[in-house]
Amino acid sequence: MGWWAALGPSTGHIITSQQACFLPHTADCGHLCCSRQGACLSASILLLLATLAALIVLVVIYGLPPRTPGTRACVTPTNRTGFLCHDRKTCIPASGVCDGVRTCVHGEDEDEGLCRDVPQSLPSFLVAHCGDPAFWIYSDQKCDGINSCGDCSDELSQVTLCPSCGPGWWRCTPTVFRYCECIPRSLCQDHVQHCSDWSDEYSCPGL
Image 1 (tube, rainbow, N blue to C red):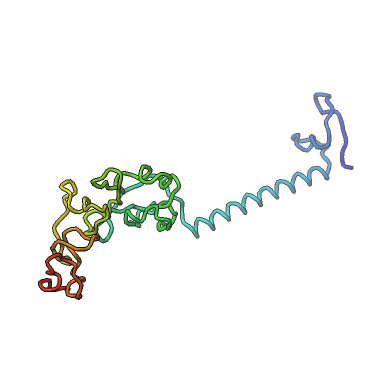
Image 2 (tube, rainbow, N blue to C red):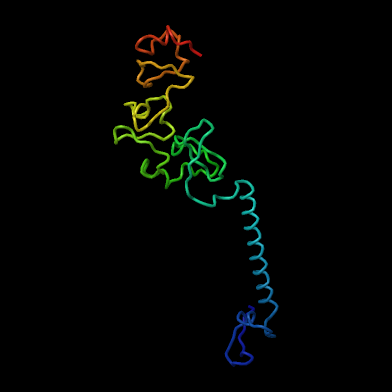
């Protein structure tokens, strides 16, 4: 069935028909074994070309993978601390990292290594510490007018150095736990007391 043995041309050793196909300038290679060798070679080339084509299609659809795995800080359009995606274009808020939603194109904001042990696994620029060391917040939640730490240390602490109330806020002593020393002007004149002195209803001009 296409198998035979013969003496080698120079060594005198017995070789098979399968081995003869791989010897250079061997006249003993039959058409059967050489045709099989050519078929295998053609199949290997086709498989290689198909794999290359598939890789090209994936790159076109999903883009190139990130060149560097490192994390970088950025500034969001609202002037808050952000996380720069590996496309070096998309800047997402710090609080959007490890929130269960893949915002970056390649999903690096939800990377397992980044989110495995929050906040210890997060880069320092994404984390802000509260007055109580047992609590932490994302850095973009600092100085945003919201009592994210629960003790207003993210808004009123001397270490935080937050700017005074902006134009969209009204300064007073809030009666609502959510705020520290300002309330949004959108809450003024809504017939609900948000300031201890009722200034949100009688003095605040609203928006």
